[in-house]
Length: 473
Picture (tube, rainbow, N blue to C red):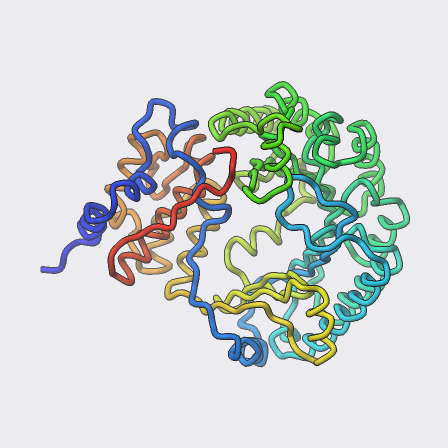
């Protein structure tokens, strides 16, 4: 008789390294919020496909875009690889702002949009979300903002209710640029505030004092033409629990449309880690301290009755939908444009050349300047659905079985039972709900389920690539 999947899972866990088992089942602790795991395993949970050889990148792109799309909501991501300065904590910096290089880049980006718009996949049905990220899109000149937005409207079929997002920094997002965005169809502004505390902000390279940030948020919001949302980080150097509480309360008092509460990751090769190592900045909060800040932020947002859209994201009304993030987390088609842009089509993952000079040259050669393409892993739709649901704090077990023929509850009953005993989840009928501790550690829980499904689907000895994603531990 074939071994039950739950027995197969337990057998595989028995055979794997004890250190790996701890990353799946968690630690024995009376304080799961702070100590359920030793560290966060990944920034974003997922299952990687197979890297395709370079000679297949262009043909794979043509294969994917040379046929009409299957319908359903989809997105476009447009990358602006310029910043006026590099923030200490940032892991996404590419190029300092250079007006001559910027003009050349927008020329090629418009050409990339024009060429790709002729592909059946791009032209076949509407885009429901367009996201201009970076880098810092607001570092562009007013003229180049207008040029780029005009090209997006001309070349991409946008749904009537398309969420059209523009990332910005307060420092250079003046009224002329705001008006250029609104005139070009932008209906959502995402601003990286990180903290309202002037001392904390300036220690990280953010120039404006907190009072100026609040003033500009109110000014942008008064246009009443777009959702205004911000990012806040917890665990920053110099940011005590009291400072964090005031950051969250200020977000709530501002009356803008929503915000994200993000955990700081101090990457080993970052300027922030260098500054802490040299002693020019005090250490960032350890993971256990960040867990308490996560819980306190959650409490304050719940007390304010803001609407929770995901574990990290909140809305104060009906205007903010967080659609692009929801689509990208669920694995929906996302078409990439611009140097450093990432996307997904039919489970294939691709990135556009990060080297801006190479990008310019390859556009001139009429290439789609891809940096790599990965083929999909078998079962990628199931994996994406699990990621998207747990991002919202639960897993619909009945839906998993009905939609994919996979009885996740039966397969992982030993694991889910352990997580429930350890205070990470609650089993409520057809749902597995994450507790507050489970929400803080959701990337670890999600990755554990994905690892288990890959193991059961593909067989072989179980192994984990386990690393702490941040230097602070």
